[in-house]
Length: 559
Image (cartoon, rainbow, N blue to C red; front, side):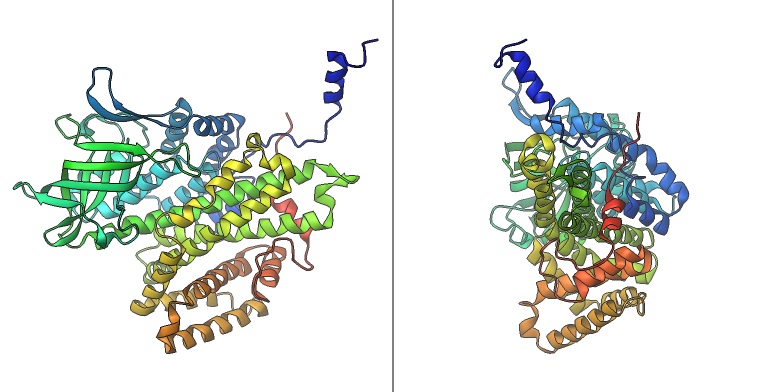
């Protein structure tokens, strides 16, 4: 018999600790997500869903999970000079970053929809982006900016013709080379400066015409530019006529590198796999995009598209978080029974599932509005629903992810669980492309200047009239609130967040009442609309909580 303190005895002690959930790997992130699959069928068709299933299986694989871990454990590194002392300003990434990027671009998640004749191209891409971002959220940033650049580039036919085919390519071709020698390209954005942030009209970067038609040189500093290794950037600068948008290639047509110095990489709370940089522009060659003084209007389409991806990215974080939580409670026991069978834990996870389902439904509805943009209702709805969703869904994500982390207890606080990565990432989308205040004020701007946007919102929410009395009452109350605020403009801005939150909830409620299973719609209306939602997860009363939990719990095929 081995001594009591022998290594064999220690190994035996470890072997008895079996009450742990296995890693969530080997599941179908698309086919196993009822809310996402139903939304794809609703806004597209069976062929679109079937085409997404390979992406879903790869996104849920152990291999993808490991690459996501490695890309964050080995963040990008700035290499300002080569071995000979020549300034190169390159950023080195771990091979896992390139693995993730290659698959994201290969699955058509960058700018491919803009060159597609598929009437559901943007829904397909949105569902794929939501699913694939669950592998690792940081690499979604350059993918998103590449997607968003194309509608802004259309301000100049020649520029769009030059860059769109490269941005829409499904070939990932990293490295700094002349565009003509690349199979695919990625885009970035340089808007904010130290003194202005969201107030881009305060920018000081100067644009000086060179004498060649449409060509300028830029001189200034950009405070926050993500993905400095991308091939082309949309940049705002002050020309003689005011704030203007410019196209800035990283490498010039003759193969020489544009004068674009990377000052440093930002040390961020999360998003660590992605390189975000300060840039110094001193004689940087740029092509004007649109007219002088119209820079904000030119780039606004890029902002709208990246706001959509903020909503999709937050919905993705929510889905990954609730999947991890529901998976854990399905396999963990405490006090003599599974956590998933205990009423209070059921209540918490069911509430988290509702939050995720509502975010997914709204995000895919917005993508469908992009596909349907020629229709006036779709265009007007998108104008108002985007800042509403950006404000609400992104604002809800940090608290939701924190609650999901807590479902795992101490295990959720350990890096190996993956939950701390989600927690650090959760606030990002609420900051990117305008903070909560900026988006709430944009809601007011749309209400004040574009009455067709409010009409579209009322029409869309009204499609569920009669489906649930609580939704009907909440709509009446919100319209009364809106009327009183419009009658008292002085109070409008102070109440912008309250109004935006209620309008976003009503959109979500309308979608769920019309399309979700009855137990989902009933629980949502009871917990979010029947009374003011106090933000406490797990405080729902009644309803089939077990069904909500089971609907959101991933399944992994045996063998």
